Image 1 (cartoon, rainbow, N blue to C red):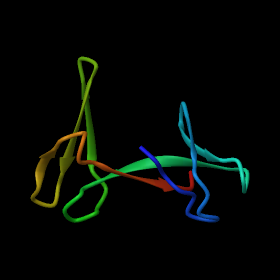
Image 2: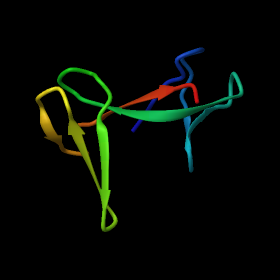
Image 3: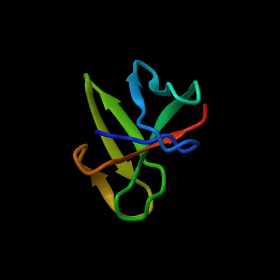
Image 4: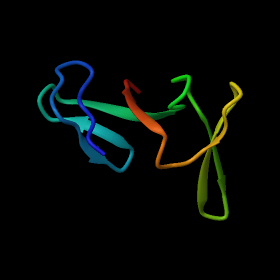
Length: 73
């Protein structure tokens, strides 16, 4: 997954807690969004599995389809 910094548009580096831009020296958390409506998804965690649910009528979303968007913490 390749993400760009929302500030300077350089490529972000993955970290344990999200992503980091080495160019502008900022950390970002990654927000899971629905590929249909682009609104934040509810993250469901159980027994080591992570699922994503859209509360806007799109139901369960496959991890492969989730859009991850960098946002300031």
